[in-house]
Image (cartoon, rainbow, N blue to C red; front, top):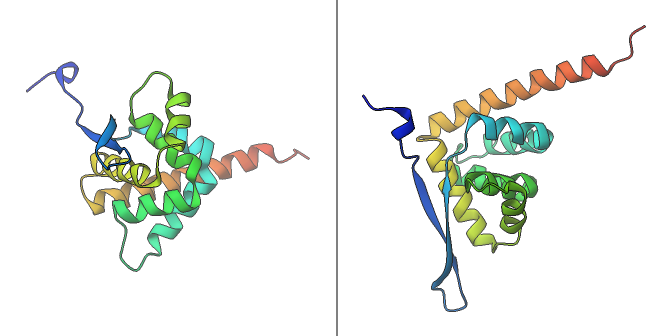
Length: 151
């Protein structure tokens, strides 16, 4: 059995093509962690709930492609923040800002690779999305109750 400190987190390379289609820049992404998801829910909870509803209503079932597409359509700021977080860079805000300016196809490729690195199967993806949104619902309920005036 190995030590966690020796574990190399899997990554995927995302290429940014130039005019001729050949890569002019590349960056790596990793799967997102619980801490990443928690931060995303705090900042983009309602939009991510809409992404979940859209993905769950898909006739094709839930998949990394469906979730990536829903993220880009419904929650573009969350999508670019996911890319920024998954780069592992120290300056997440700048990485997210730069991710927002990437070509659409590059953003989609990055989100797909992040989803595959985060969830190894569609069943894992569905389970994680359900857990995150139910946790978000509980958090929203708690916040609403705390914000109500005491009589």
